[in-house]
Image (tube, rainbow, N blue to C red):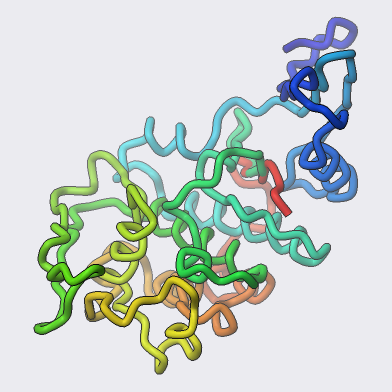
Length: 305
C-alpha cells in the first residue's frame, strides 16, 4: 500500500475481527506489543496500527523481497560467501537483541528474513511454522525449550545459504537398526542428486518423522553421550535407525574452516551446548566482517513468543 500523504510504500498485515468473539486476538496484541518494544536496525518496524469495525491493519515498513526469493533467483554459485557472512551476522544481531529481551522468535526461516532493495539489512515476519528449520528438541516433543531453538534455525539457514555445489544426500543406518513401527531403516529411501543449481533446505522434511530422520542421517542419530536426556524426551523411540554422523566437508565443502566450526556449534544437538547468538557474534568466522553497512541489509520479521 502507499501512504497518500507521504507517498511512502508500506506493507499491510490484515487481521479479520468479524470471526473473533473476544475482540482483537491475543496473538495480534502480543505481536504489536513486542514490535513496539523491540527497536533494532535488524527488526522490522511497525509504523502504525489502524483499527476498523471488522479489521485490524498492522502497518509495516516495506521491503522488496525476502531471503528465500533472493536465493531462488540467484544461482548457488553466484551468492558470494562474504554476502552470506554479512547476512548471517545481521541475522544473529537481530536474534541476539530479541533474546536479550527474553523473546524467542520460534519461526526463523528464509521467508521471514526480509532484504532491502539496497541489499543492506535483514528483518523478521509472522508465518506458519515450517518443519525444515525446527529444532530437534521440539520435534522430539520437549515441552520446555529455550532461545537455542532459534539458534538451530539460524544454523539451517546458514547451511542453505552456503550450499554452492553438488551434494549427495546419502547415508544408511548401521546394521541391525530398524525404523519406527518395526520397519527396516532401509525402508526410508534417501533422495540423492545435485544440489547446486537449485538451492535446497538442509533438512527438507515432509513430516515430523521424515524431518527427524533427515537430521539423523546428516548429524547421526543422537545418543545419551551426544545429548544427555534425549532418550527421555516424549517422542524419542529406541527403534530409531542408528545413523552415523557425516563430516561437514560433505555438507558444506566450500565453507571455510571457521565457518564450518560455527555451523557445527549452531547445529549442536544438546540445546545446553548449542552456541548462543551472542557468542556466535564473537566467533572467529566474523573476524573479517565489515562493520559498515553491507550491500544488502537483512531484517527480522514476526514473533511467536
